[in-house]
Length: 118
Image (cartoon, rainbow, N blue to C red; front, side, top):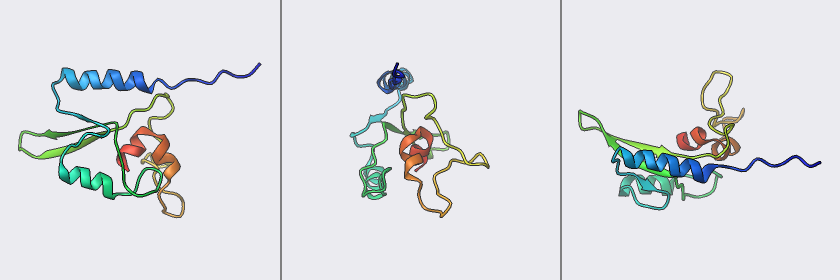
């Protein structure tokens, strides 16, 4: 008998997390919405999670401001599998580089934290 493929629950995760962002009244933007021109340009100009040109689109993004009025960009990547949160190296650091110090696009594309850090 063929092994049943586990289906991603990413749409459910996105719905749940976006609900949390709403409940905290955070001004978040979804994948294709503009956050601000500087961040939009940076996401467009940086190579993609697959190694191509631009068009990085985090699932959600927002700017948070602290009590000293500093802004911090927050980029959120949702994944629908429990084993796709983060890929760490032997030093417990996000593993986004290969042994040759090249971008590890497999990890960047497959793991939520790795993609957000990218």
